Image (cartoon, rainbow, N blue to C red; front, side, top):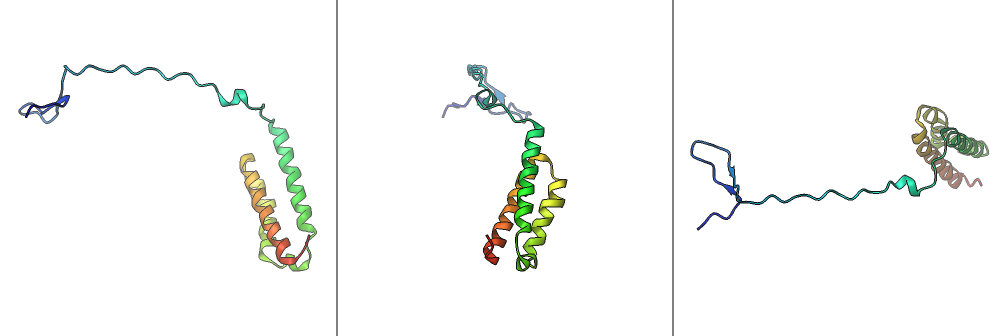
Length: 118
């Protein structure tokens, strides 16, 4: 049976196969240039504007937390939401702060449902 592969068996005393020179090489066409996604999107907000928006959202959540009654203050989620809004928020980078605020908002929602507030 004839050998049809482009790779020949190794030569005697050699462990590596030998490529056939009879196989033509295919040229790879370059990929078309893509347009950047940023060119079509709205311009990015400045750092200061994003920072101020996150600070305003944090202040809203702290105000919501302050309106909860004594029953909610005894719940462990109350202290955890305060920790998220203070310690974790301050330690996080700007991109991480949004996730911290979302987690705190979730805990405050749970507290409001459990205690019947709001």
